[in-house]
Length: 418
Image (cartoon, rainbow, N blue to C red; front, side, top):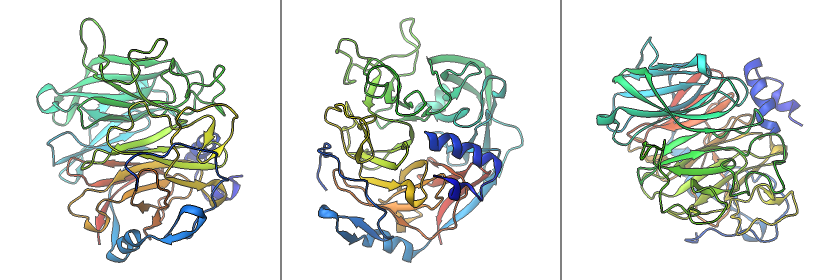
C-alpha cells in the first residue's frame, strides 16, 4: 500500500514509515452514522455539507503573501523543538536517540543540554519523544521528558537544570511510568496547558486495531493508554504527582483520574492555541484515514475522539463510542498520507500571512498545509507551496510563538515570512 511513498526514502525514514504506517459551531459535532471515507479535495478547497467543495480564501491568501522555510540546524533524528518560558534566546531540539541540544542566539551549542542515551530504547516509534519546561522554570529549573525506557515502558521524568545551557543528570525523579506491551503507538508529547497543568499524549498500546482487552485501551477509562492525560507533575504527600480535582473522571468508579480526553489511537502532537486556548490533535490512522481533531477551549475535558470504533470518519469496529467527536480534517492513504503530524495555530507576530491558521503535515506526504479550524465543521488544508519536507516528524513552537518543523532525516526549519 505504501510502496510508492516509500520508494525514495532513506533507510532511517523507511523504518519509521513501516512502523508508523502499521500503525463554525461553538461545540464539536458528535459522530452520527459514519460517512464513507472522504476522497482528497483539490488544493484550496474544503468539503462542505453535502460533499461540495468550497474555496478556502484564507489559505490561498497565505500562499500568495509568502511563507518560507528557514534552516536552523541539522541534528540526529530530531523530533521536537521548544523553549523555556521567558527565554527568547534559546530553542531546545529533542533527538530521538536521547539527547537534547540548545540553539542559543541562532547557534547550536556543542555540548548537549541533556544526554540520556543510556536509558532510552530508540528506533521506530520509540525513543526520547518530547520535552516540556515547567511554567515556573525560571525559578524552579524543573523540566520534564517523555521517553521509552530500555524495558519498553513509557516514562515521564523530571529533571532540573544546572545552568541555562546544561541539565543536572543526577536530578532525575520518576513522575509516571506506563506499561506498554508493543513498540508502536507511544504518543509522547508533554505540554503545559493554559492552566499550567501538564498534558500527556499516550498511544493505544500498539499493534493494530487496539486489540487490548474487550474494548481496547483507547475506549477504556481504566487504562492510561490512548488518551490525553492531565496532571500536576509536582510531588505531593508522598506521591509523584497530583491529579486535579477538576479532571472529568476523578469520581467515576473504575476510571483513572488522570484522564482528560480519550478515544485516541496515536496522538502524534497536539497543541493549544496561544490566543483562544482551543485544542487541536493530530491522530495517526490505521489503514486508511489520517485525522485532525479540534475542540474549543475546555471542550476537551471528557471528550471521546472515537478510536477504535472509528478511524477518521469511517467505522472500523461495530461497537459504541459514546459521544464520539468527528475530526475536522481527514486525509486518505490513497493520496499518499501515512502518519499525520499535528502542528499548531500560528500566532507568530512575524508571520501575519498565517495568523490564526493551523499548520500540519504528514511523514510520507511531506507537504506543509494550513487551514482555519472551526469546531464541528469539516475543512482541508491548503498546500503552502513550500519545499517538501522529507520525513516530516514534528512541529514545535518557541516562547515567541515561532513555529518549527523537524525532519527525521536531520534538518530543522523555522516558518518565516518571505
